[in-house]
Length: 205
Image 1 (cartoon, rainbow, N blue to C red):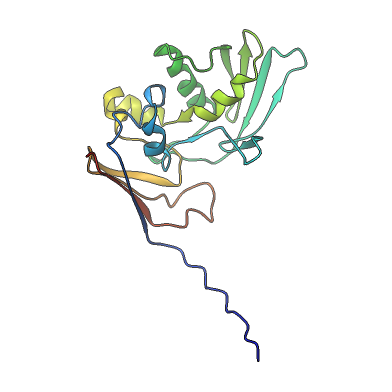
Image 2 (image 1 turned 180 degrees about the horizontal axis):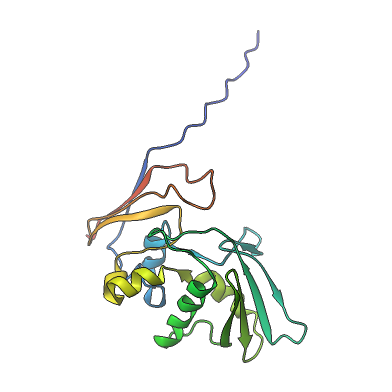
């Protein structure tokens, strides 16, 4: 006789715990995030676009983009209704502020962008010094935080307090010991996340 295998019942919840090396110095202020700071911030911070497995640009906080025929500008359409973990709107003004932080810190990202215009609440236009395909890589690497959190608490506070739009919101951080995230119930992808939280445990030695 043959038996039919029973498919396991899908479950949600639980805490993902994983270990890594020493913690990064900055994982909550995008212009200064580097190396392991990207993985430390990943649960909380998102970018406008991402790359799929074939290297194609896919939407994230943005729904799409259009390059002008003369290659002098790119118009980006943002996803509506996205909230930061502090309850404020992730809109065109917030994205513009985030992009301008890289110029303030003289970080070599978005270097071909000359000026940024807010067209409406969910549309912004990047005016380019010259067209470069590397700009799309920057749009993936530039993660977004809440300008309100920055203005309220200051730059140094943001270094270790990532207030973004991601599936998980920041709970606590103890350097070289533990970085803790919990599920963000108001995440824009309504069926996600699947986990209740993520604990990143650091083993510095």
